[in-house]
Image (cartoon, rainbow, N blue to C red):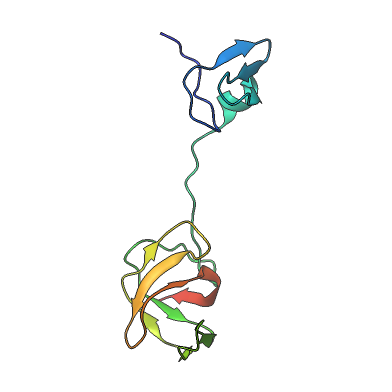
Amino acid sequence: MSTLPACPQCQSEFTYEDGGLYICPECAHEWSAQAAETAEETTKVWRDAAGNILQDGDTVTVIKDLKLKGGGGVVKIGTKVKNIRLVDGDHDIDCKIDGFGQMGLKTEFVKKV
């Protein structure tokens, strides 16, 4: 069995070592063997506008009036948003706001309660 790491681009397990590089035969990606050894699995940390770490299920407040796309109105400053869900994508938070429904927010516009 091979103990070589899987390709970081295509996750192929058929990598091979050539000198100081690992090479993927499927996507032709090459990376340093030293970088693969020192690279640690990092998890994304979401922070609010004040720098507090956010987690799923937190309650936050909106720190700025936010206009909704499509002419749906404005989410006013101070609006509480309960039970947030953190996601990767163009918005960091999926939530449901009373009176507006399901929407996505960016962490730069909220503060943890």
